Image (cartoon, rainbow, N blue to C red):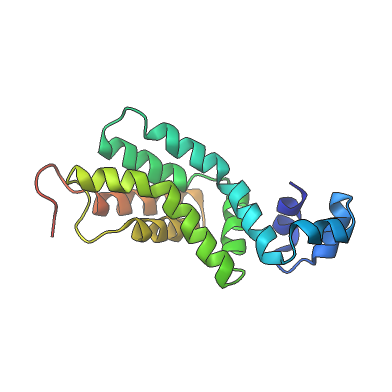
Length: 167
């Protein structure tokens, strides 16, 4: 997607006219599909999250709730550094983009979160929206190693031992 590359290279402040030029379409065509930049940013966020959504759906197939939750959480954080940087930058482009990014991640992690809660293995008081926030926090890590550590620590704190859920 041309817009994805343009946002990756120049950030969310790039003009829609420049994106249209790069895509080889007239500005009228671009504005017809995306009358405001927010809509285009949301489409790029959707595109960046597409593989993560597919991986999360596969992780939910036939595994126990803890394994599924760990896989979904980890895979929700599993984008290349470039994709992660673009996602974070676009999510921070404004209130609409921020809310859309949060909804996207919640939609990915929500089913695994609900399944873990039903199994009594999710720390009490944690919501799917909390999990989405934790995923977003890991996306801001400075390196893959730092991201892996953050994921490990968060998962250890979110998944309770077998038995009654922690208070």
